Length: 103
Image (cartoon, rainbow, N blue to C red; front, side):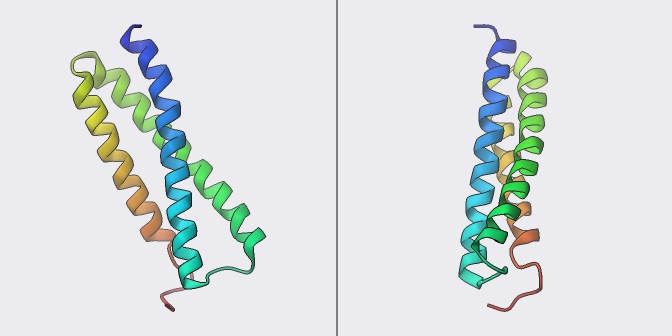
């Protein structure tokens, strides 16, 4: 398997994993602070937010594995992991409590 084929496998899976992780962490924060109208409204919002995060993370992983992975696959994977962690952190920090801190 060439590195290009490996990138086509890694980028979507890692992006999807990043989106799911961000949505799960945001759901836990919302549940702890009792944010939202009801579970259905929160679920739909989490679906859209998680999909957006997954698309951004897939692009990030794809670029890193495609370009940096040509020379050093380990550096590409570590850079992708670090970038995904920062994306999830910013995602949860910005959307944790939309109306301000009540909890």
